[in-house]
Length: 262
Ligand SMILES: Nc1ncnc2c1ncn2[C@@H]1O[C@H](COP(=O)(O)OP(=O)(O)OP(=O)(O)O)[C@@H](O)[C@H]1O
Ligand SMILES: [Mg+2]
Image: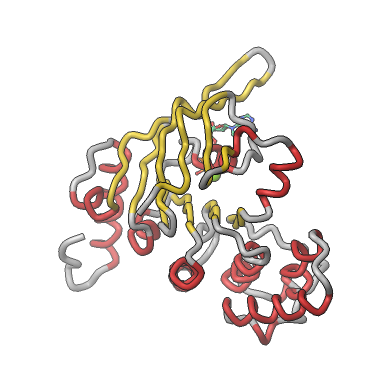
């Protein structure tokens, strides 16, 4: 497999009045085509900032981001707008338009790029089927469960056939059952459509379920990265160790038969 997304020595800081906070302190990361790559870390570690630097919703101070042969950090505004159409994004709070039906929400990015009406109809129907919401086509987001809302968010993110999907805490607002079904949907999309997925999460269990590899982000620095399995078996970073400890304790508390293993 070859590297598809490459991040080189990425730095980002925020300035508030006279104070400058460095949030990303030299991030290096290589992600292969077709991978589901997890970025895990505690609140405030810089996960969202990192993922937002990939599609330049935040402008990095320095460093480079590549997707395929394109250096994202070298694109002008117009080129960036064009490239972004092929980078899907899903959010913790779904970011749906409450006044639009499910159909219109999913059709929105297609409308923006001037897709003919007939094609929009066909595409949205296909996406609705993919996310299992064909019967909710004319419903409004207000009448949907959290899991269903996220399915709409996922369908919308796929409207322009992206090659990369950025997922920022997509399951953090969901109950455990919906979380599992959304994770499995992401895995299915990755498998069937070959979309490379970067998945930000603070839930180790979520990363363990679908991410082949993870990077642990700690205070703006990647403190370890590699196969999810290896990190689970023997975490080296302090964040990794704490995560695993919490994960194990949680398991013990919630398992009658003693759990066993990780
Ligand atoms: N626009 C901004 N202006 C100033 N500071 C910011 C801005 N965005 C993020 N930060 C700061 O950068 C740090 C990292 O924030 P970020 O949202 O990337 O963390 P995170 O790992 O995604 O956390 P969480 O798990 O809570 O979502 C925080 O200290 C935050 O306060
Ligand atoms: Mg965040």
